[in-house]
Image 1 (tube, rainbow, N blue to C red):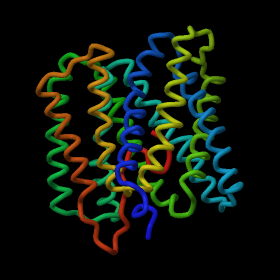
Image 2: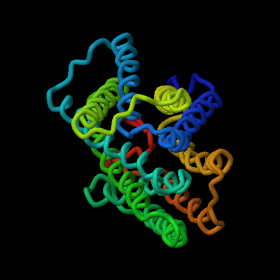
Image 3: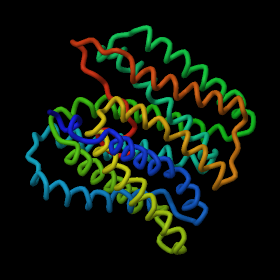
Image 4: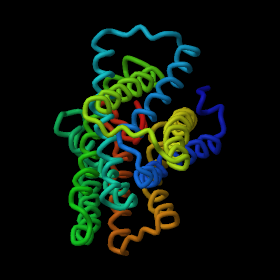
Length: 310
């Protein structure tokens, strides 16, 4: 029997929910650390550096030092140093200009973007599920943005949607690379290259800040430990128990949690129309996940955390 059959489904669901909560507080904590004067390069350099160190220790302990082809090394390095670091930067920067709740909803346009790109590149075939999901997600974005554009910074919206687009490309490339390596190895390399990217940015461009209050450092610690290390570990462990598709569907609770926490902790508010639009965006993403995959077409996993970090 498989590991999934031998382990309690309830434990897997709980692990995914813990992971989803961890990722959902990421933009919330971003608001706090930015208000405390932290620079983007500071936050993401520390986040990825500590995460890389932790995951390398786990990787070498469990699997030994990886022996990969040069092409795989370079691809993973590019995924982290360019793709994922860019997505993380765009997403976190967007909360400087727009509410964290809105940023989370806009990021979740990525499942339908992944589906469109997968169809265009012949990695998946078009289907009625995908068409319905596309229409629902598009309607959702229209509802969310139709109100928001009148009173919310357009730059923030562009940054959040840019993060969704970059992440979609990251997922499509990452799904191919993951066939040649393990999740621990890919996570370690992606975190390492992302840390180096923001280290270089901090040294050359500036914006790195170290003279911060202990509350701000606590926020950065929360992003590093809870929204990265714990969130990734619980996601992978939960996915082993309930499967990638179920984990992906449960992960769509992330923007719901972010919106709820933003209302409670940041006093943010969405209109009824925006909230309805957010539900449609998430529904469209779920339909993309549930869309039947032909046997001759590889399945594209579109969970926010597979193959790397959130």
